[in-house]
Length: 395
Image (tube, rainbow, N blue to C red; front, side):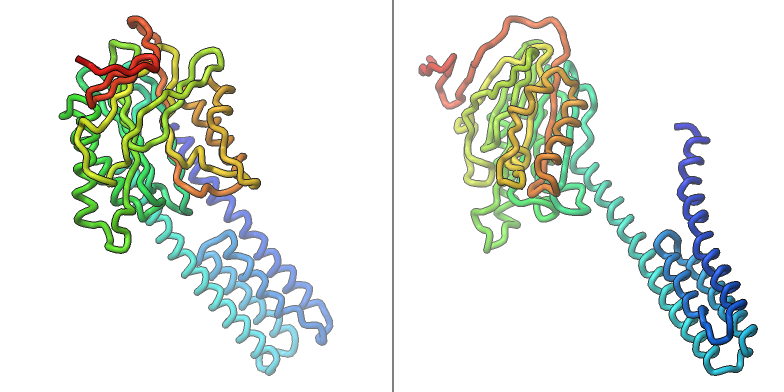
């Protein structure tokens, strides 16, 4: 946007409010002229209070004070034409109008101060969101990326849902998670999990190792800060995803998190079969307790990661949002367009505010040269290998 366009955007609200300011001024002029030319037993002066009472709806304190002073001056002019300023009736009218105008101006000043405070709080919340949930780049390696966050609490920009992505030597690692609770009360645990992921994602060789490292961080945090009355009730679900650059697969480790959805050309939507471990914070585990599942992720496919706030959103009849069914309409959409469709459709489904925080990440694999397709391959790190639904002990 050029400088001229920015100045035009700034000038538009100013011009709009000053144009509306002509309305109370016109009311004052009309009421004054009509009252002056009316019989002495007709008193329209008290209606002048409408002008300063109307002004705060579209103008600030200074404009309201100006209109209020103009109304008091008009009442004084009316009194001068109808018996003079010394009559008791006119003195009472002028004094009452002045007192009411002062009250209106004070109210307007308090309202403006609270608006500034709210704007500051919003800016801090947005800054905190960018610190905790770093905006994901549109392109990471071979992936086109889009993300969406919808907080359930009013005026909140962040909550208990979280996501992060980082580039590794030979691929991309992504985490999406959901801390128990919603809104501002869950930010502490979300911040801890995000920081732990960003630190450990480059150090751990496998996703089970990474999951065990995150579990250790969460357990330490809960041991120090979990309230006694919530002992054993704080936990977080997480889905860890690793997408290598040179192989058309995706590796996943689920810690009690809903499985992703795979959108393929031809309006095909599939649900990878995961072997989830318990959520983080329930009990300490070792890497051997986590499962590494591997699934095909071909060029042209889109992987949608989400939190349970999406699939648990209800309509007025109590029905859950049918995410997988709705996605069949948008399998060819870009990641940005896909999330736009989901957001609009989700709000139409609920018909109002969300009951839980919502986070979504869409990962689209761009066409590149890859090797053969892997079908339904899942690997257990505790000594078992699962292939195409069969299980055998590894040597």
